[in-house]
Amino acid sequence: MSSSTAAHGPDPLAEVVPQSLCAREPHVPADRLVAEMVPPPRFDSVRFATYIPDPNQPSQTEAVRVLSGFAEGLGGAHASGAGKKRWFQKKAAAPTGPRGVYLDGGYGVGKTHLLASLWHATPAAPEQKAFGTFVELTNLVGALGFQQTVRTLGDHRLLCIDEFELDDPGDTVLVSSLLSKLVEQGVALAATSNTLPGKLGEGRFAATDFMREIQGLSAHFKALRIDGDDYRHRGLPEAPAPYSDEQVTKAAYATEGASLDDFSHLLAHLAKVHPSRYGALTDGITAVCLTDVTPVPDQSTALRLVVLADRLYDREVPVLASGVPFDRLFSEEMLNGGYRKKYFRAISRLTALARDAKGLVGQ
Image (cartoon, rainbow, N blue to C red; front, top):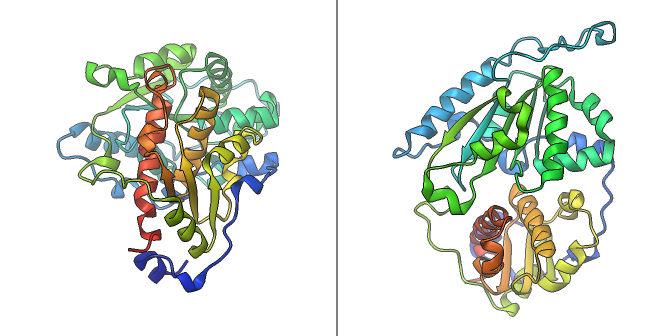
């Protein structure tokens, strides 16, 4: 799509046939899962210097200072002596003192920006650093197996885990066991997770929950609290109202690389694709156009939509939609339930992508 098209809306003379996400059934080999464990495209160019702290929240400035020092401290040799012939060595002793940082804060305070900045600032080759969401890490274990994942990540200098999930006991135990093995091999850790919305006004963030769930690993983490409002809505207008089916369809046909799907059909298709493949599902897509958006019917469907929203947000793919506004996707019961942090995150991110899509519609 040309810059002039993006600025002035789709050119009716440049009509193209949009793609359909429902027609895609991607297969992702395990080696691609490993190779893609880097900050997503949205965070390719972020650095500590590009993080703009809220002047009313001194904890944000302090976070930059602490994380910058943490990155500098990772410039020495691998704590386990990586690079040596470790098969002749005894099992490496677990490093003493904090070997990880946990970024503790609510929605949109820039935790992922800071986590990606830490990855970029750590003085190590890209293949010695890994960055992924909690879901992507569990998918990697599923693809490689536990022991192979330990071997694959064990020589890394740093592992960054975004959106650590505290609401799935089985996966939490799995990842906690994995991280214990990696810490023993000298891998430094950094993680984020979101505070539950119901706790935002209590002055109590998620650090206590995080430390409890990772049990024996808690001694290796320094909790770094980051206060603030959701930057995606800080001083910005409300999300644009949904468009008509006709507007969405016309924009899809006028935008090269766009996809066009009925929302209910897409939700049904997501049930047939493993969430680890949702990133590949959007390969090459420049905009996602959805008609007749309705509230999601059940929790399983809602959780799959959350993963898709994350992948679209990571890749900066605008979303143009008709139907109900994105803040009405999830029922009150869902927004008050155990997975509410995921749903609030999805609403926030889809709202940002809806703003990004405004230029696709001719004025």
